[in-house]
Length: 55
Image (tube, rainbow, N blue to C red; front, side, top):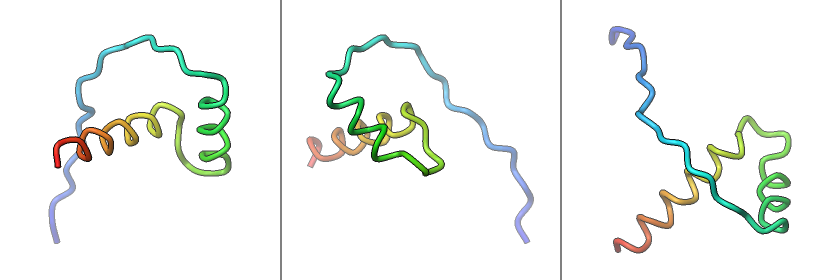
Protein backbone atom coordinates (compact mmCIF):
# COMPACT_ATOMS: atom_id res chain seq x y z
CA UNK A 1 0.00 0.00 0.00
CA UNK A 2 1.35 3.43 -0.94
CA UNK A 3 1.92 5.98 1.79
CA UNK A 4 -0.55 8.81 1.94
CA UNK A 5 0.92 12.02 0.59
CA UNK A 6 -0.72 15.32 1.44
CA UNK A 7 -1.36 17.10 -1.88
CA UNK A 8 0.13 20.52 -2.44
CA UNK A 9 -1.80 23.38 -3.94
CA UNK A 10 -0.06 24.82 -6.98
CA UNK A 11 0.91 28.48 -6.80
CA UNK A 12 -1.74 30.78 -8.20
CA UNK A 13 -2.18 34.40 -9.20
CA UNK A 14 -5.38 36.45 -9.31
CA UNK A 15 -6.38 37.82 -12.71
CA UNK A 16 -9.47 39.85 -13.41
CA UNK A 17 -11.13 39.06 -16.71
CA UNK A 18 -14.50 39.95 -18.15
CA UNK A 19 -16.76 37.27 -19.60
CA UNK A 20 -19.75 37.89 -21.82
CA UNK A 21 -22.98 37.21 -19.93
CA UNK A 22 -23.89 34.29 -22.18
CA UNK A 23 -20.55 32.58 -21.45
CA UNK A 24 -21.04 32.94 -17.69
CA UNK A 25 -24.56 31.55 -18.00
CA UNK A 26 -23.30 28.63 -20.09
CA UNK A 27 -20.58 27.73 -17.59
CA UNK A 28 -22.95 28.02 -14.65
CA UNK A 29 -25.46 25.79 -16.43
CA UNK A 30 -22.75 23.22 -17.26
CA UNK A 31 -21.52 22.97 -13.65
CA UNK A 32 -24.94 23.07 -12.00
CA UNK A 33 -25.37 20.09 -9.68
CA UNK A 34 -21.75 19.02 -10.09
CA UNK A 35 -18.83 19.21 -7.70
CA UNK A 36 -17.11 21.92 -9.75
CA UNK A 37 -16.49 25.62 -9.27
CA UNK A 38 -16.57 28.28 -11.95
CA UNK A 39 -12.82 28.76 -11.57
CA UNK A 40 -12.07 25.03 -11.81
CA UNK A 41 -14.14 24.80 -15.01
CA UNK A 42 -12.41 27.79 -16.60
CA UNK A 43 -8.94 26.51 -15.64
CA UNK A 44 -9.70 23.09 -17.15
CA UNK A 45 -11.07 24.70 -20.32
CA UNK A 46 -8.01 26.94 -20.72
CA UNK A 47 -5.62 24.02 -20.13
CA UNK A 48 -7.49 22.04 -22.77
CA UNK A 49 -7.30 24.95 -25.22
CA UNK A 50 -3.55 25.32 -24.57
CA UNK A 51 -3.02 21.60 -25.24
CA UNK A 52 -5.02 21.87 -28.46
CA UNK A 53 -2.92 24.73 -29.84
CA UNK A 54 0.31 22.92 -28.96
CA UNK A 55 -0.65 19.96 -31.18
